Image 1 (tube, rainbow, N blue to C red):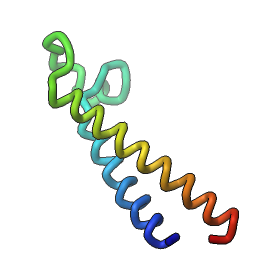
Image 2: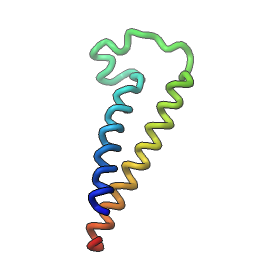
Image 3: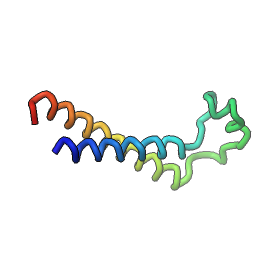
Image 4: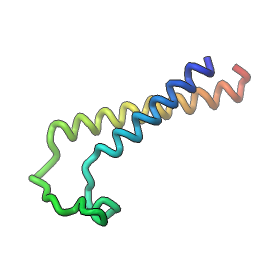
Length: 78
């Protein structure tokens, strides 16, 4: 069981990195330093950006749950 949760954690971690990097820069951070602040916002987030937000939150919940599950398995000798 521990091996399965570890594999889920590794996949969720890699997907989480990818999803966070796909997000549009909100300004004021490192994205502006490297030219990310040049493009202007067209008045709100698009449907694709909202779906990306939802997917990122979903993967984050899976990531967090797998960490908690691994911690509980290690604590109780599962």
